[in-house]
Image 1 (cartoon, rainbow, N blue to C red):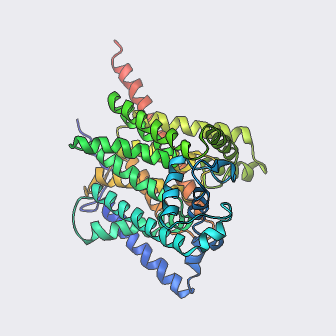
Image 2 (cartoon, helix red, strand yellow):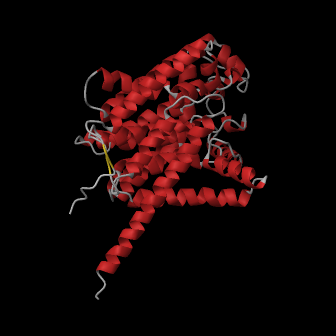
Image 3 (cartoon, rainbow, N blue to C red):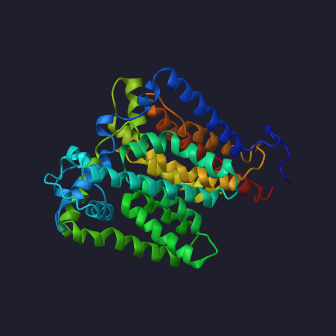
Length: 414
């Protein structure tokens, strides 16, 4: 028997329409106040202008060295997979740029053609993101095709973090969204391209490799095997151009060194801040334990949830906040979750009851992430991802356990 009792029932109002209204009102209010205070609000949410676009120009410098150079030995910040450096090498060679000092980011940034290339690269990423949005939000109209993408682009994750920092996550996220949209497409070509795109995204940022779990959950073993082959090729073969085996060893050591850092924009950073506030000091062992518990909780939730958007949330939240060294642009990984959520809910009127009230958690998360934050209150965004994802996962696990217990009781003879 269907549950007919609704805690909240709104006529003709959907999550999608509420999100659009929220985005428009927030944009108008923020920029009106910003103009009144002579731009101080916008300056406050941008990162330090001295390191604007640094991730792009820093890695352009490393990749501008001759092929065969172990770029991972140049600097401890050379930490991207080699496929990413192949991309940066292509961008550098498009304008014939080769740095005298690969580690001097200011020189790379001062080169006029490098800035032009960055602008064009950003434009391509935004076009891909808008295309990804169109794969999920298929209804035409100004609101769907212009306003909604603008809300995603001009709020903190994209505009004030990914673009400002110049990180390749700006390319990886549209690729993730496109792959998610195409992986169940009726076209065999698009399904195969989805596998290649996931492998490319993982070759750029590693984290998107988690999307392979989608195929494992659905027991699509042949596609899982092909994805593994594409991933191995695109991850390991490019090391040939950047130091070979020695480059690979240095890369691994760099990742190990970075793994010891704890940034505030991560789940571990939130735990450390909480323990320091409560006890006056950080407790490393407790932080690590909670971090691994978050990992297990997300993975268990991924395999038991029936929400398609919940599956993507479980994976993308790990991409955003699980790694302790996550930086202030990783919240952009929540974009695929937003797209899957609104595609799944469409414009159905909101009906909140005991069977679907977890949808409200996801919606609140989106309101927190796609907002404007002042100064270093970006922590609010990452704490929201950590707390609300944990809440969603705990509820799903408890509902699953409760269901199993009740099922066992109902099957037990009197």
